[in-house]
Amino acid sequence: MSMALVHARVTRRSFLLGSAGVATGMLAGCSTAPRPTLAVAPQPVETSIFASMYGEKPDELYPLPAIPYERIEPRFRRQMVPNPTGERPGILVVDTANHFLYLTYDGGQAMRYGVGLGRAGFEWEGRGEIQYKRQWPRWTPPDEMVARQPELDPYSIANGGMEPGLNNPLGARALYIFQNGEDTLYRIHGSPEWWTIGKSVSSGCVRMINQDVVDLYDRVPNGTPIVVTNLLGPRPVV
Image (tube, rainbow, N blue to C red; front, top):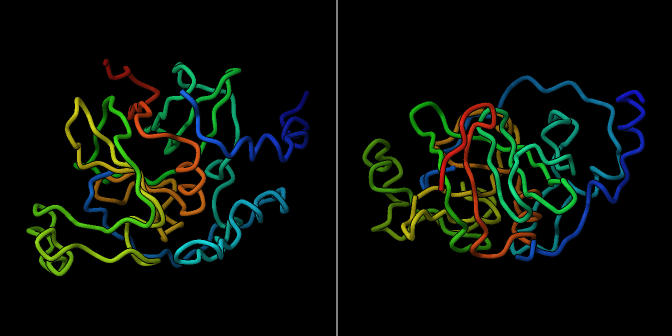
């Protein structure tokens, strides 16, 4: 069967599977990136599916605008795929080689999201867990980041950080990664800068489209294990 035919048979259910949590980044000082001047050429899409996924969310504390999903590479849009990670169900896997985040499910499946990652020098790999989650979090860049970028001083820890909102670099949701009981200062979080998905531009954060991080937030409980790794290379050990 051709890949085109397989794609044509993907159902709305396979894209939107489940809204319940799975039972069972990334520095906190995430920076912004300039908006590109060149648009990605529109691609053929399942219009009704993606319009629903990435449409407006007026019921949010800060209503989210629709995302122009036509300008995002199709592979970076949320979709259910065969699980390539080798991890058991209920695990988050960030594939740094391909800019994907997977949430693994039973039946050899995984929900895949496109993500933006850190620039060279800010990457982190390892195993940890989601210690806790926040809706519409405050942004408090670490002191080390403020030292590099003094213009961020108004949002420093000492000054209480940046208020939540549409322009906050942590976006609509944040998931806080701990390792061996210690805060790594790495986060999975939303971002208003949808055009950075699939790129390495942040100060280490795993950034997601706001609509995608809202979806992920609702699927994973506190304590969810996470692996940040290059799926093309050796895996981090426990």
